[in-house]
Length: 440
Image (cartoon, rainbow, N blue to C red; front, side, top):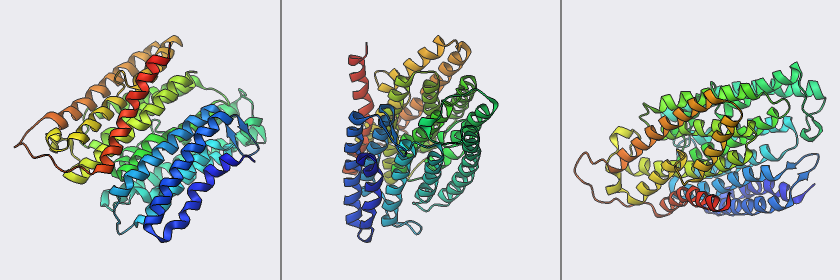
């Protein structure tokens, strides 16, 4: 068994031994995140790693880099953001955070469909209490909705796994070859609904806006930036058993259309970005099933950092102004200048504005969509993306630049979390410029 993948799983769990002292577990959590990033980078050059337990390709390492990078940023952000509540202590928060990240890493590196299902289930177990960390009544309701809806979806996914085993008599991914029969078609269709629940696919995505909007901002960043891509990764791996491309295109298109319509009248800043995540995830899923993995990976990487920046910026606004309603926030640039810059850049990033890398990923995916003959879907998705772009950026520019009342003095912005927010928002822009230079 290779040491590096094993260390990826063990490090975030073993550092929880520092739970007895708050400062220690904070330091150890940061160290854990740094080490897992370094290991993920090293794995890129060691792939493929194929054993009875592990399956890690270069494709897998991009998901690992997403998970570990947002893990580091959210851990650093949490230090100055998270306060103890009557439900979740700070020490328990970091234990759950480290365990949540471990469950996502486990999900994408195992060489077994059954263990992937276990990993997805573990992400629910480890993350449910994190949603309610701020102990509001709405967060309690969001947690219950998350548990009930996601559990229902994961149960359907279990039937998909059972059908795979029934057909192949094994769940080892590398021992399974694609087959076109009624059992594999049913297995993939059930996976679309089951694992699609966690990945934000229509119609089972209703838990997502509640969980994202009520969770603390560093957890919202992990949910949006890496949990959904991890679930999409599992869904794609099951899809390869019997590629039902038309069904996946239809459901992804419906997801993008419905979320763009909802975004037309969104009043809650974090819910707005949560619905944007559904749109981005389904576009990335389209890229994967259409045979455009480069576009999907570029979109997912850029989205992970851009959406993390959006939630980090929103967290600062909620923390300082104590306001979530878009209509009640104005003149942000005169109050929180750096936060305004971060919020604007992350908003442009997640809506696919050139030259941000999300634009390049979306362009490649849409180009492939029309090349494959999905002209109607192309038109509908393009119109939906334009609608989402206008809706989100209209709200953000209104928040930042519209001054309704008397001009307020510049408020004090928390140094660490503002810096992390800015870094997250800038990365998609840097990545986009680099890709424009590198790509032909």
